[in-house]
Image (cartoon, rainbow, N blue to C red; front, side, top):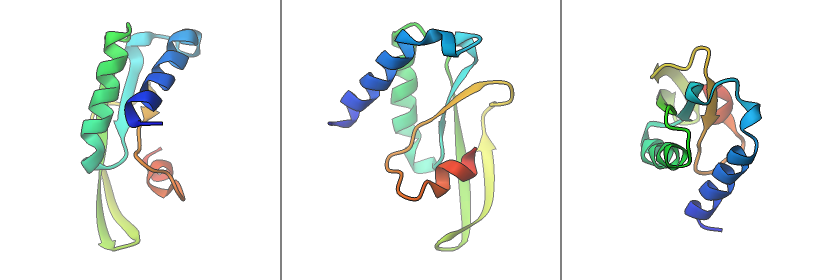
Length: 101
């Protein structure tokens, strides 16, 4: 399945299950890595095209002191009180995604 297909699969699921969200304008798409912001932005645009016009965008910027350890994380965007959808390219150990939460 290509990226676009998997994105549409998730968007279709969210469209069918809008009751999962208190307010459709309180959704934020989050990129757990700065280099994946374009992917998260494309997903946010798909949501907006399907009726989630108020969906926001946020990203996590990580600075590593050692290759396998995150030294510092900064959040760019507002997520407090929002329903966050984390969009990541590959999840193997889910370290980046879990730390972003």
